[in-house]
Image (cartoon, rainbow, N blue to C red; front, side):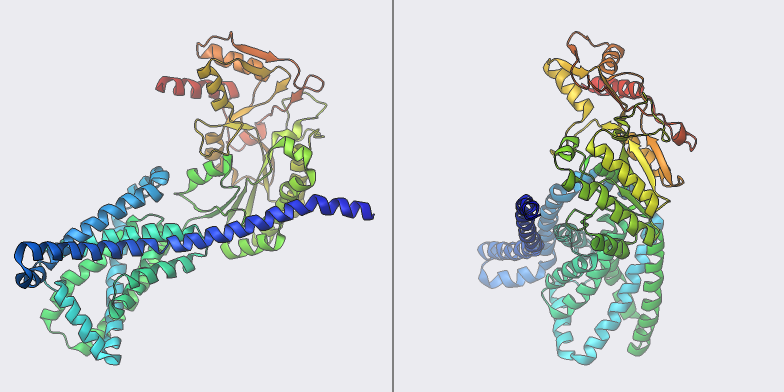
Length: 579
């Protein structure tokens, strides 16, 4: 007994050290991202300071010290325009390379879906917020008239209160866009990487936005506006939404404030009107915006993996996708899993996370089982309590070891030969026992046209193309029978699985041939020589692997996948035609 405990200690000790080290590294990284969240503010202030100094020095040199001060004051809007354009250029390039470029397709889809109705709702919110902030300023004037007087003088000296074309361009267009890129773009992007909650991130970026205005009065209402801008960025998931709100908000000040001043409305009437109109309009606008952006919440575990990353990309603009890292959602901790689901309340949970390396599972069954079986069980229990629809990504490896030759149906008796297959089968059984509405999808080997991460491996199509391009021998086993599925089709058809009744479903492409013959026919169909194709005779010779699937059950619900060879031929021809 003592010997067994000693062996377990020496087995677990290195893993505990590695786990603790990783936790310390994550803390340092998180702190680093918080620090990076301050950098956009510092960068904007630096541009404004050095830009102002540069223009002042230039005027002193060209006009002399006596005339420079007066000329600088007269041309303050022109100086602000030049500085704002510098801010816009730097923040735009910075945001493009940091965030926009990697999500370009999704971001462009969101921008294109931005309608005039959406803009009208944001305009209503801008008007409501302006009224609310007018009330805030009125209270401030009662509490500290001297501070408000200083603020009014500052606004007048800056030229913002003058109604000119230049003021409209600087205050209502260039300035808001640049500030949104700095704060709702860059600052929020860095803070998101800390994996803090939304309202923590939103409060920090709003505080940065307030500080950027460098005076207490304007900084206070800028903080309140920043909260609304951050909320809008989260709801619409595009930088365009806060840009539109900011432009509308500033334009209201430029156009409407002079109008109300000219009308000579008594202060009491004006403030009461602002309070009522502001409260009603803000409440209605937020309600409209919430309804406009309400999406089904989809939790994707293993979101950085081969399948998970494609699912996030495919559904990111139509669902509110939750894609937590392992640190944020540790599946081995039942309490953390339950708390995460209680906090985020996803309607659909797509469980992709797994230790999928069959060799590693065979070598380290205890460690892999903690994720593949126990982690799945924890998730199923949480889904059952929360009423979330669980989609469990299982595997065709369950059929490896069956005495009956394929193709296999879901009801076939199975006795998996490998540890990975056994773990997936046990996970299915536990899901169905704990959460009977679970949809277990037995997936095939998948491929894609591109590699999204350096960690990805085993992509059949890219490996095939590499051998083809480099003139290498193409070696494929003759005793390995399996389907191979386009991962893009799996992600596309996954949505149909959300409405399936609980149960097990084969989910992928069927195949009638072994791997070597599949490749042989693929080469022939694309007019490529087969002379470099070699049939591997040793792999699975003692026990042929036949894990081909039948898909009639899924087809009864309108879910159809093309045959392996048919889809591979179509994709390969498409890729070869681009070269």
